[in-house]
Image (cartoon, rainbow, N blue to C red; front, side, top):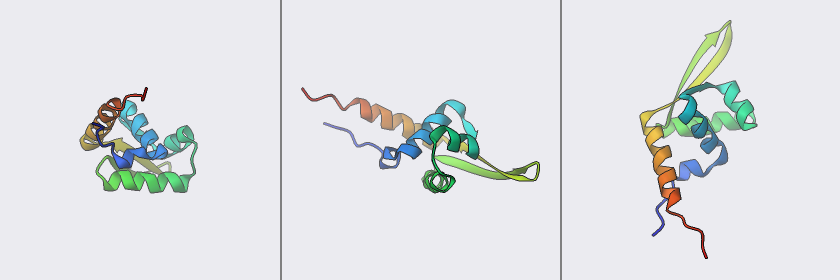
Length: 95
């Protein structure tokens, strides 16, 4: 029987954010935008969904008088990411 995948992680940008944060633990907004090749508006919307789910924390500060947004993966987010991929492994190719 196929296990349910996390619907939040089926979105390409959200999955990309989580993939980066799993290895980096934290990343700045501009780094994520450049790596994922998406618009600032789209990334901002997707980050908010991950934050609302408790998968990431977002910290807004200033660096040299410029806004700086830093994203960090949470324990809940790390567990959700790992579970998503464990469930994905249960999907076998059809013969």
